[in-house]
Length: 180
Image 1 (spheres, helix red, strand yellow):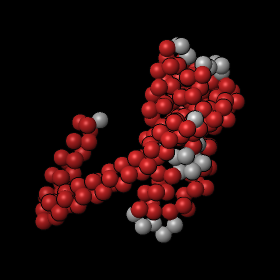
Image 2: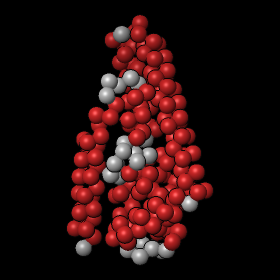
Image 3: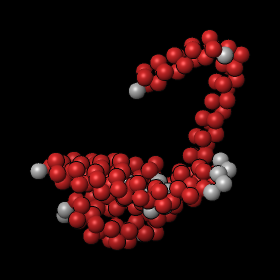
């Protein structure tokens, strides 16, 4: 993937040198500045939600969320041990809140636990849920839109909910069809 991005960058910079040589350096500087601003914004968002996640872990809220999501996890993944169920619920709940970066460690842990049990269907289900992730509250995108002065940052709420619910349903349906 790095090779592809490098080729695209070199090709674009070369073309820009011939088309608009006066603005090549300013475009590179502006792009770098915007990349750093976005990275800092995402770091702040993930730091806040990672802190909330750590507090939830220490206070036992994660166990309560696991119990709340237990019927859905049993339906999607079948019978799982307590630790696997906890990691699955953490991943699913973080994805429901639109916190993909916070969901990743729990997803990796859940994938490792499912791999140890050689639960291929569970792994496939986890990958579909993680990649399509129904988002009840797309908090990362709303935060970014607010930070970059969107007139109405939460306008994406309903389209995001609809599109993620549809993609998750289609993914799970295709898993059922092709796993037989």
